[in-house]
Image: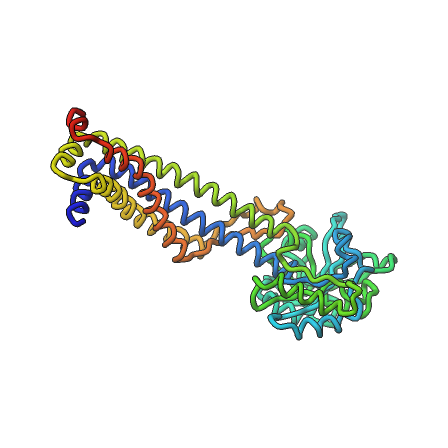
Length: 411
């Protein structure tokens, strides 16, 4: 074995230009694969975290009739005596936090500008626990329960020329269809780093939202965070049974995987990544295959002589595969180092998409961060070696089929 390894090393160093060409293809493939894996997994994590914090929770309880017309935000399809539902949810194993919310639509108008926006009534203390709301305030302070005030998004404030201390007049329909209005003082300006939220959302105390919308002791949804997000479907099914113990099926608990575009988007992102990953490794492997095949054909006479001197077919194949493994090992090691360095930088600095994301009508962060993981680096390193060896199988088989007499005639 040591002889074969030594022989393989000698062959790798014999034609350094060809070795470097093969090595570079594997190195870049491993580097790009690790970088893309880090970026896509980080991006998916950022989008899911934002969606969970701002919109879905890990589970969201709503009126079953509300789901049928959710885009219309039907206030009359609400959760009555919601405190009873809160009590049931809080006693459920695996639940970390639960808080009520009211979501409603408003046609906002100020100084001749108007656009549809979303108002969300919240319990400020609970939301602080849910999403560290105070850390998202970039100017002013969070709203306080019992006060007629609002926190508005940074782009919302910019579009309507609002500053902390200004008055925001909210005009909307109540659950009964009548017109209702309230003047809210802008207590603070927030930024989630996602244009769809920062431009079209404001928060107000839930008690004032109930008064504005004429739904006392009612909310439109109950927002739930879990200790383990992967158990959301199981706990949602459990909550469905407990909340609807009477058998009326009046309320529905929905896991975050069932809500909106995020889960579908995640699956698409994974498939796209796997496709790109396969294409990159295919081209890198093709370079190895081509290089090793050329090396085998050029050394046909040498291989014939070795076989004539007693080298077995298995040893011939072993030499070729060892050459590929050596190239793959060192190239993958360098590629893994640079790929890891890039993914670490991406996890710290992120990629800012800036104004290009302002027109996107989905809750997607304007700054995407990668996810640095030694696991990604290790797997990328192993895959580089594995694909190098796989690509060398055909040249190895070709070399083993050389007959000594025939090979000695090759030039």
